[in-house]
Each structure stands twice: as C-alpha cells, then as structure tokens.
Length: 198
Image (tube, rainbow, N blue to C red; front, side, top):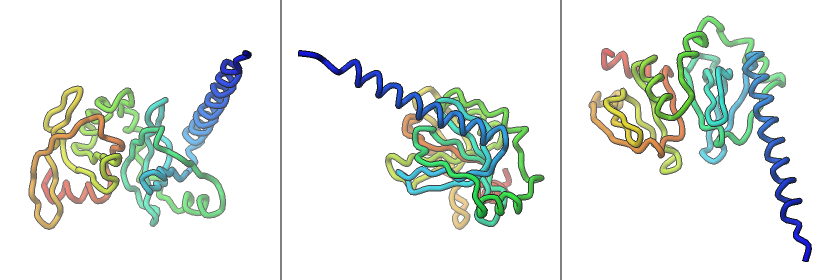
C-alpha cells in the first residue's frame, strides 16, 4: 500500500511557512513604513488601532490610538492571537492624518524586551511604573492594573490599582502562563496613577 503521508505533510508545512512568511513580511512593512493598522483578536472580540513598534515570532508591540485619534499607550499581543490585520483605505488614512505625531513615544519603546512574557512584564513595569495584564483565556473581560510586587518564572504578584471610586489597593497573584495581553501608558491607567500619586 502506498503512503501519501510525506506528500501531504510536506505540502502542509509549505502552506504554514507561506502564511508565517506573509505575516512577517507585512508586519515588517507596517513597522518600517509606520503605517497605521487595525489589529484584530477575534477570539476575544477585540480590535486595536496603532503602529507596529516591534515584533518577533511570539509577540507584537504596538502604539495604540483610540477612535478620537488620541494616544492610548501600548499593547503587546501574543502573535498567535491576532486573526486579522487591516491597513490602508480612505478611512484608515484619514485617521492617520489626524493623529498628532508628537504624542508618539516609539524611541523609548525600544527598551521593551520581547524575549519572553517575563521580560515583557519586567521591562514594561520598569518603563511605565505600572502595567495592565489580561487573562482572556479564562475570562476575556478580566484585567488587572498595577505594579509588579514580585515575580518568578511561574507567577507574578501585582499590587493593584483599585477603581477610581474606591482607590483601594490590593495584591493579586497570577500565573504567568495565563497572561495573554499586556498594556501600559493608556489614558485610563495614567489617570489612575495620578489619583494614586504614583
């Protein structure tokens, strides 16, 4: 009996490589040309607009802008969670023209180390003195804002900023493996830091 497994396996591997090559090719284009793009994580019902600052095989760092063209910090995605990327077109190009480029901080963002989740958490916390972590595979609506209190290779303890209404600070321990997204420097987080005199 003739086996076709090697044939199908080789073609499947070629298709996977083409897909990865295209993703890397166009992320590099977006990064080099600083083109505003939309990034979609459909499994979590989210979309973000911004500029690619850096990426590797595992992570993508963008500078965010909100619907009113205001700077809204950074987001670091797990690359595997991004299902679509959209750029160009009249609407996107109009928004790009309305963005105030002086708000951008891309030079300082080169200090964010995308080697692993741990290095991302450490470098973001060091740069912004706070971070937001999401655990979307457990609950897509839950996130925690605060400062790293302690961390090892498996867990992180965050000294949380409570909501504006209570200004209550607590500690929470999370598994690093559960973190799917990291943010910092957004308008909401920055306002919380001001309230907490950080």
